[in-house]
Structure formats: C-alpha cells, structure tokens
Length: 110
Image 1 (spheres, helix red, strand yellow):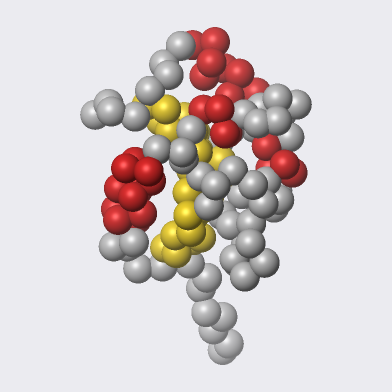
Image 2 (cartoon, helix red, strand yellow):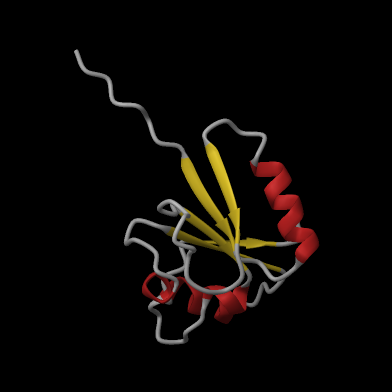
C-alpha cells in the first residue's frame, strides 16, 4: 500500500500591525505542520509554496473592492482568507463575507 506524505498548512500573515503579526507568527509556529510566511499586501514571493490560509486586516482582506480577493493576491481557489480586525459593524462583516473572506475574527476579543 502506498502512503503519500501529508502536506502541512501554509499560512501567510498579511496584517499591517507588526505586534499582532509577530504574535500570530509565534502562536502558529508551535504547531507541527504549520508553515508561516509574513508578507505585506501583495503577491507571494517566487519561493513561497502554495498558501492555504491568509490572515489579514479588514482593509487588506477587502482590496480590491471588486470582491476578487483570491485572484488579487495570487491565491489558489482553495485558499481561505481570514480577516482579523477590531471592526465589529454588521455591515462590514457582511461586506467582507460577500467579498470572499472565509472567516472574520474580532481582534482583542475573547
């Protein structure tokens, strides 16, 4: 019987807050199988493997405003975009979900 090696989860941190980004990197790197990359808002570098999850702030997650979040950041269709923001207005949460954001977490909340 052939066994294929399982690929881990690749996470790209695109949050502009350096302290929050550093905390996310530290928290995620303790898990085996999770590879973390830190980049600004833009395309992946040539040496970065396929990204599974992107963690961004509200503004970065919604750029451009046309709802093509995955295409604009060069993400495969299976990549999940997670917005991490203190913004808890219902209209903003709805707009994020409609733009293709997979998850919406409130920063600084339990």
